[in-house]
Image 1 (cartoon, one colour):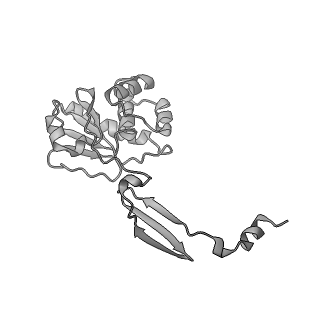
Image 2 (tube, rainbow, N blue to C red):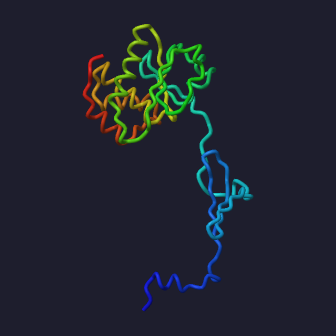
Image 3 (cartoon, rainbow, N blue to C red):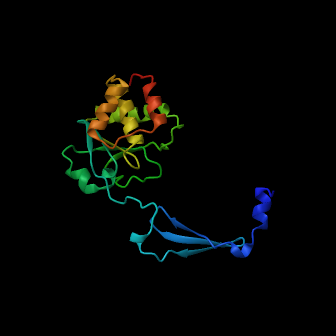
Length: 205
């Protein structure tokens, strides 16, 4: 009886069918990769978009602004839309950017603070929380209004706001999480951040 390896090696090459791989990039570009020996050939996928399967990015803007307190707001794309920033009844003066590789687009109009945080469960969150809380508290002392945002407004920015509510208002974790979710239903910190927030030792600010 042949082993699996021997069976594979004895299989006639002429009976093998050519295979290709269809890839959809984050930008939505569709390509076909095919192999011949050790050479890979890449061509554009001619199939109409509606007949292809794969990941399609959501390019629509999320301009919803969640009001946590009169001076603390939470969003995703509002920080990049001047109309939303100015239309909002609370005049935003400060923007806390906790995204990764997202630029501050109106540096002449708002006071910015960038604290780049990766949305990964093993990232040490508390040191970032203290830095962010200091910025929010200072802005509040100056009668400012802070908008907190990250790449999607789902994990990092809500985590920072939850940490702030625990530090500044002494709110229990569950209460702070509930308030943030009420203001921004899309909020969903990653499991690692949730665990760190549950065990967060509040420091007076």
